Length: 409
Image (cartoon, rainbow, N blue to C red; front, top):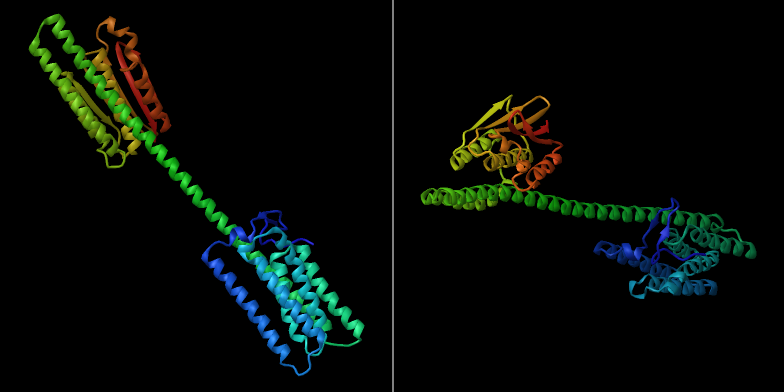
């Protein structure tokens, strides 16, 4: 005979392991329900006692049965007390419940012992709820066997012959019903806990994703700003070394200072742009080309084809950063050469093409044309576009260097 599942994990008939009540009943509501349950049990014991001892003639068997049942209820309360969580006591509960059903079954046959069936009913409810299936049926069966054996020995006929077995059966079924509700509540609590854990993990993933976006955005902004700054500083150095033109060098250094200042401002803007509204892509490209013309005195044209439609913030930023990379690339390797930016809104995709003339043959064959920062700029752009299921191409064709970005609709 197994002990109850109050302190131990039990396996349901479906094979699912469910935690014991000591682990599940931790909330204030569950503690309150436990106190109410024990108030009802104590009230039932007192009520049965009052009814038994109000009789004028009390058979000794009834008195003994009531005392034994009262002691077993006390042991029952001690076992279910969280302060006395001991495996040895837990295993005794099934025996205590069986003792209650047996002594109440024996005493219920007596003329003044019929009220003791209430205690037997309470015991079988607990057996069905807290003990294993085998233990529950064994506890109820021992109670029925005790009552029927007593009736056969005494040779009496009483409603107990049929009534007590039916009462114990009803109590056992009520206990099983109570167990099913408790298991459902525990499973619901587990599902809620899993859902909360999943939400926390999703928040962590979203945070990491946002950090990656911010890091990528700051990297691209700094790569653009520092690349343009490097072009200005190199030009100033060349003017001083080759032409000895101090005024022109000072002008280039002043532009470099403004580029550094603008780079810091743009870095701050980049983080804000991840969450705020950004200008439309054509407007962003127009601002970018105008700034490039002011800094490098290079003609830049912007063309837009197709029906314009709003794109995601990530897509807009990917196109803008690609254009920035291509413009800095052109300023470094093909200075003063005209640049054409073409934005096309197609039926199945949106494309951005930045084309600049390579100039003389020496520049046309330069191995550094792939990226402004040793190959990592366009690689970063390619990775950014891949996150949007897009593609990036870069290469020389017919005397021009072309950078193309494509994002499916």
